[in-house]
Length: 638
Ligand SMILES: *[C@@H]1O[C@H](CO)[C@@H](O)[C@H](O)[C@H]1NC(C)=O
Ligand SMILES: *[C@@H]1O[C@H](CO)[C@@H](O)[C@H](O)[C@H]1NC(C)=O
Ligand SMILES: *[C@@H]1O[C@H](CO)[C@@H](O)[C@H](O)[C@H]1NC(C)=O
Ligand SMILES: *[C@@H]1O[C@H](CO)[C@@H](O)[C@H](O)[C@H]1NC(C)=O
Ligand SMILES: *[C@@H]1O[C@H](CO)[C@@H](O)[C@H](O)[C@H]1NC(C)=O
Image (cartoon, rainbow, N blue to C red):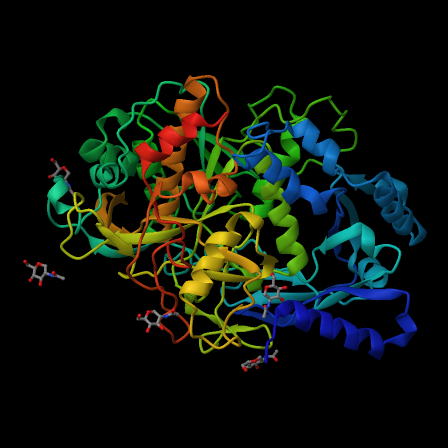
């Protein structure tokens, strides 16, 4: 049997509509298969409580966003590199006035006064504060309070309905079936960050403990990765010259926070030119460097990302740290996306909003509509080492978020996400069941998100082969120490044109011998990762000592640094940033510019996973970057 979540959802929608003939003009808009793991139903929500209901409006022209993006990202396109401004994006994709007024009118008809209805700056969202009673009547649903095993509560429903004439105008409603919950830490816990449900559970770096010897020699690279190893492996010998024009952004989610003292400690041993330097911090939704809670789970990820990201672009290049979420509410990817897509438009020329805690800003009249928004530009390369499982999210929700990444691509931003650390399994080694739930004994491969979004570049992990030297012809293989490189095939997203040839070649040359019940074997779905970089044995200063760290969490910021240096060279000669790189790196012109990884596998779900092979593979993608070759080729593009 070939079961997909989408089919199951559609099926249950059909059943429900048949079962409820009295609601014929009202259709189920979204429905969840089950409560995500770790959560349980506690009670019905109080009818008088107020919910900030947000309607994600269907955007115009969004079905063509892939085509627009391809047009400016494919090296053979006459429009290559003609990135859009934030204003152009806002005008192209803003929901139609028809959608806006249809939803507004419907809300008014249902007793919400016009003054209560607010529209976000980009017109993407309508918000109304409604009582639970109003919301339940409006969408024929029941709101419950769910409790996480950590004690965190979350308001959600099992399914909700929209009238037939409204559903074409709405992507989804929040809060509803979604559990992209923002978790606080558990009070009086054992010191572990308890941000389950927040992006980051699972794709977290892992440590095997303290480094007990002095590490500084390139001969030690197969036991200890330090910046000198990465420079040697990928040929990254480059002094940036266009640093004023360039930018590199790294995203972290509170309560995870970097420690300045760790950055200093790392700089002392490995990167003297970083001494005294700090990232330029942009706070999103009240994000800040909390110092109250420390430990590997709090500091490991940001310490790693910044120590390696900043070192590899050298102390000359300022790195931007997007710190999202406060201690009370945390943040989801959407807070970050709202920030760079919507609210940036409301700040005319102002990059000084360090204290914002309300995103997006719905204050009435807050957005007078300047000709061009986006005066605070997102960094040219943005690396994020956090991630969900695709199945944690509904298809509508994942698609909406994915389209936001495409918009960033249109603006010339390169978006990198680590591909996951559990091979073909989901976070924490969970796998899918035919009914769409995820359990430890599930048998179906469980792809990660946003890695499966065709508009991001997904980065897998490699490691040094045992006893190899960085000077060997093929020193690396797929990472099989402590973690396995996330990879596989999406159940939500169709295969993008740019990777068709590479993935077809893989599927035909090395047909995986797993039954179609275990993975999306259609050959029509988005395959990931796109590229890889070393993810094992990193020496990272965490909480005052050097630790050995593993994960695709290492691979993403390192790749980001390499692409940032390529941008530097292009900006220096008056060209634009490389932007969305996938159509470029899969193109014939770029063949052979990544170091092909041909050994190792990515086990999970009781299998050996897929094999790294000659050519693209669902373990290490096209391979690891060869900086000199990529640089030379990218400089020939307009
Ligand atoms: C860092 O440098 C100090 C001082 O030179 C040295 O004692 C220590 O072993 C180094 N740490 C590592 C992991 O190499
Ligand atoms: C889904 O399937 C799994 C494994 O077969 C089972 O344990 C679980 O109870 C099912 N859940 C639902 C909601 O049907
Ligand atoms: C690596 O080198 C050690 C020591 O020389 C040797 O014992 C071991 O067999 C080697 N491993 C491999 C995989 O070659
Ligand atoms: C496989 O992927 C395609 C394209 O995204 C999708 O339409 C299909 O439903 C998926 N099949 C399964 C079994 O998930
Ligand atoms: C991986 O390679 C091994 C050895 O060649 C082979 O037996 C296995 O079927 C391959 N697995 C997949 C999923 O292609």
